[in-house]
Picture 1: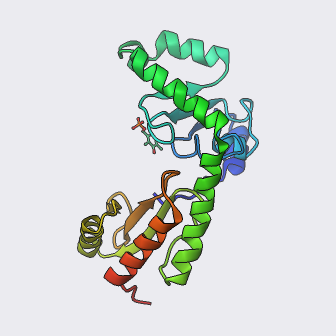
Picture 2: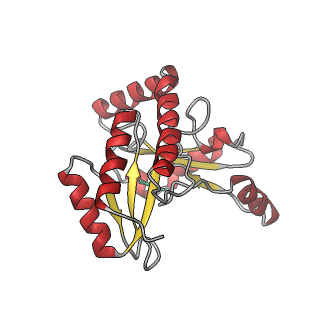
Picture 3: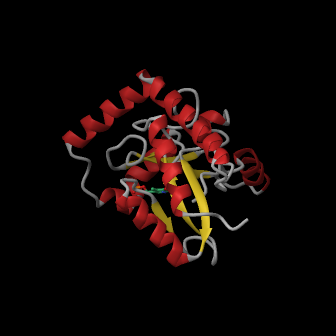
Length: 210
Ligand SMILES: *Cc1c(COP(=O)(O)O)cnc(C)c1O
């Protein structure tokens, strides 16, 4: 919810201490983090021996749908033979598989999309400070702004939408009571002008208390 990144090395350490298999759900990291866009695992320089089960979705950075589990051959064979939700679910259609493959090729070949996105994230953080908007220290595309009150958060999200900005409103129980927030999600399709327009509009609509 906050665009923060799990302390992966600590989790690896705890899993090893307890002789447990670590599974990472990298739905938000895959396609976004790491030099090659391979995700949190790449960024943290971890491999299969440290993270035996990696799952990710094709429905976020890749823009299609479906998901994957990655691991060593024994794990994958086991899932193919015994994972009931996998066995009893229709496979991806050929069209979807082609679209996902094309997205993977873009991910490999067009690193500029990731670089652009990370430049936007930095730009967002610095402009938010300029507008005195209390953003969290997130270095990922999820940029939450805690508003507090549920109704006010909903009103702000609706007002932003009227002005052409689609921003999620996240309320309890998804987040702790009294910490309703706007969840701004940046993408490689955005431009710095969009960020300025959003922050200016938000500043006009809402003045933080402090
Ligand atoms: C979005 C998300 C999922 C689900 O992805 P789908 O593509 O909708 O199945 C799973 N885990 C996490 C952490 C997510 O953010």
